[in-house]
Image (tube, one colour):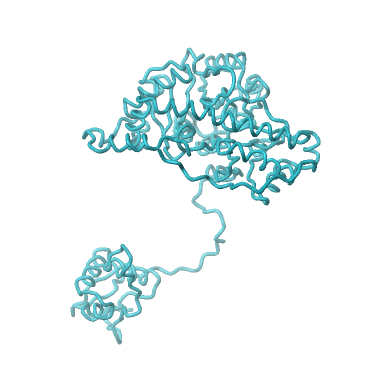
Length: 513
């Protein structure tokens, strides 16, 4: 429409819906209505509106509200005033309407990188709401009363410098407490200056991958392995080389054969995910020797090693490292709660320095809200007490699950001998594997409302083993037998009776205090 030509009549807003119960102020509702109309083409350039007094009467609001909406839209460039003092849609606000897109709404966005498409191609079921979710902790016994008290005390009257940016390595007090914790729980002797506070294992791996790797660099990953680790490595442009795991852990000789020029090894030596195997000393020394001679970094994900239910604690791979090649990851997500999003990394000081400088330019630091409270929580001994209590609880749940599998599905499933963590793997017997694949079993169980992960989804190449991954962190002892009876009735050999009524598969209410 020509700007000098006046329309036959000015536009009313009488049909606009005003929500007086909304927290959004009235002038912003009016501005949003007009803005949306302009962008949709309902109010083309040159459209003139009734005067502010008339619109105020129509909408049942004050004239000040309407004028405030005008002022906002003037500033954004949607409206302009005419020489005669009326309000008109500006010509620059007219949306350019092109031909309709031929792209399917479900087509891949053209702007998405190939690396990101590769990342999204991983098909993986996490099953967090399930009582069988691997690695999911039980937070119903967490000492929330002590935790909330420390949060309140820490931030009731904080020091000024604690409200500003923290060092990218994290708060010094928390770094010191983490070093003490690792010494007492894992036997890992390290200096606070070798510790970095992270947002968890996934975030730390993402940063380290970008720091160490160039696109196309080869990385050893365990086969089967931790799918979440593969996501971060894929996003960094790494070429993933699956290295088989046997009863002694990562087969280092096969890694050297498949990818002798790899730049990084990602391994879970204390509690391999998902098989639960502990890497033997001979393999550990073999890996470190090769890494030292070939200038290769080794990331040790100490997955759930705090929860060992038998024998003595296995020393970390970093404890054997004399050349500073091992980067150690840990997290508080399994000990405390997943949404805390606090973890830690231990590495040599040169690596820490490069990591911190890069982080300061990209991410600055992990959120400081919980860091001081966590430091006090650890200093007062609450974390260690909670950890000791949860070890007993998880050990009893693990035993109940193993007993139920042995009693109800002895001809179908064989439990792996792992004695650490929050999950176990039940491998398919030959008879079971002849009847169905683990993915078919998982799909059948899902239809019955039972979510269990298939082992084969953790393989990059064709799976060499079939089985189910049972988490027991959220599994109540009394629910183990009824749930296994239902699983046996769905996919078993047919000899197991149907158990009692189905227990709830939802996360239970948190008991505070």
